[in-house]
Image 1 (cartoon, rainbow, N blue to C red):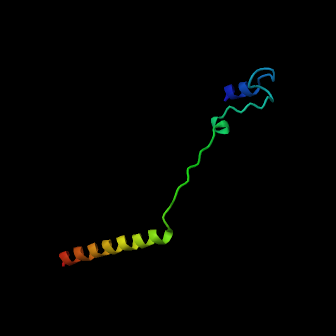
Image 2 (tube, rainbow, N blue to C red):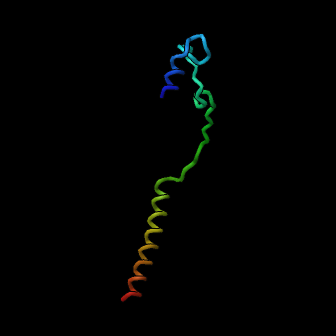
Image 3 (cartoon, helix red, strand yellow):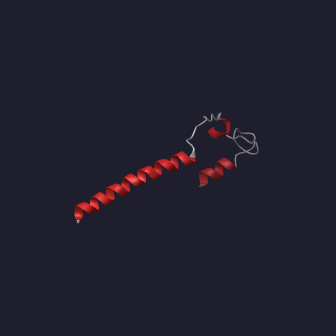
Length: 68
């Protein structure tokens, strides 16, 4: 904590000190590249989930039949 206070209390004539306003964070100057992403339609995903759920339920029914 003391080191942080020392850095903040540097005279304004020194690089990075005082009110010079230096921002050395990489994210401030890094160019952001956003890639376009295509998603399947939600209704298509839900239909697939219903199909998978039916397969699971059939498997459960088969297991129950084996245990009787």
